[in-house]
Length: 361
Image (spheres, rainbow, N blue to C red):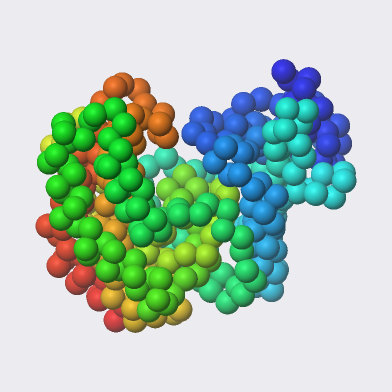
């Protein structure tokens, strides 16, 4: 297998012969490897999941447009574009991907050396740094005007999600709906408010911008001294509402428990983490956000986490066809954990609004 990977890596424009390729990380979507050249330069080699990303060429075009825009600004500001933005390595044929004999799509980016990454935002200070990273990423792209291909139709689009929801409930393919009537009712009680916000995105009241759409803390690289360096993993970059990005930060940074925590007593939204996140995010983003975006910023965490409830519960009712599960009830455990998190956000919503207003002023 290693020889095959070396052969694939050698199709890209690299500084010298590739001498090793080894697995890197435990990605849930793509297969990721670390390739090392004879001169010691390291590269990230990825086999893209073309089941999820059905149009890899368009996805790579999106990434190139965004990274070119970022690099131009970084150079203008006197920064280092090789460290402060992802660098896509082209193939010898001049394309941003190569296709193997089985039809698999492979891409390569430059490995960014001397960086620090975190799997969890476990202090208010780290939440602030992560928020600053996402805010800076959005700010640098706030004047980006080129069209991007929608490579994930329906992703974070609440109208589409509720159509899926209705279809799954109507079909009830494995007869589970009757066992989760309480959870279904919880979702239905929030449908009107969620769709009200989505309608404002659809009609342009809440604008669409270039957003990352997967803003976990481990998608931000930091310098050894703690400064935000680079936002990575741009596969999901799309034109969407910034509520998606800020909301997913709230969902993943502030949860005191795990996404699939079986002990619901572990789960709440930590308001100090939210304060740190908000402070960092608005220090970069307040200059370009509209009043309508600021109005719904505190609601963003509820908005996105409710979508995650919807998706986990839909998958459970459908028979676990999308998410990988570790047990027959795993998706239901995830559902209940995310419901508890939303309820904690709802209980603290007024405080969240006050914190937003404090940092806007």
